[in-house]
Length: 438
Image (cartoon, rainbow, N blue to C red; front, side):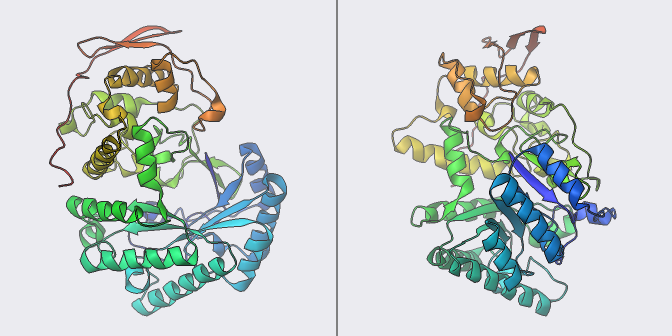
């Protein structure tokens, strides 16, 4: 679970055209006045270490940022912050060191590869990129290498640009950077999508190149390792995009705003409103996707559904959380390649295992009663284990699932406290994806 403190709302020093927070800005919901004491109350309520978020969190006055970091260190022993890095000064670096702040930088590459992080004009954009790179090098020199978030788009992930991006990753490795998160471009504007977005084939090509590159480097791209662990049922440490997210509760991402109120992950704010977090999670999206044909933007018959679950609702087709991710074909191609590599190592991915129908039934049974379950726990149940430790499954505290059985015709029969429920679907159908990733 990630706690995101967002005292400045979506206020930012940059104007990135692909930013998923654009609907909030267009609606005028940019920020609210923050109250440090209310923020502390909200953080204590969440009861876990947090990361300061934005917009760009460095728009906070230095003294207020220090007060937040001092609270975080005293209360939880560490701090985090996510920023584009252009506003980092020597004074900020001193705070990061003093208060044990792990820094995450949002950068799409050096020089023109980072033109996506737009500052109003090309000259200003290049200047802010230079400042971000300077901050990155300074953090590495302090033995505090940041983690990096890179969004793949037309300006950094095709042809020679992709080669330059990989060369930059080699430089980052030499500086001491070890963790990079890859994002696929998510935009709210069709015009921006036409200008910046990669095609499905281009995204697949870029990801497969980076997947191969990871085999030669100490840098870890989170998604590749996560996807391999998902296929093997070892999902205890995977991030929120793979974990049956309810867009009205976003259990894996809990926000605290400037008034200390609880809010959701900003990727789900498609209507420009930062809705307050719902109390009770639901898994209607996963249940619907499992039984909805792929031709209707569902996931019926996909052997990777147990791992993907439709992926992040913030990337849903037609910006409707009820649909599967618009990046479905991309993730499917990558799952196929990783599945192939695992089998080459003599391992049996769950996507090819004969126990897959029972695993799916167990997960569906849990979701149908409003409870979440990890693949690892579902697998343990299928194999006869009764391990239910919440500590082993950091997705929340609702993990106990009722017993579920699956009939030959695809009906899932769920036995739980509420009685007997039946859901029907063609669970034996399997999508032929052999043409992807070639």
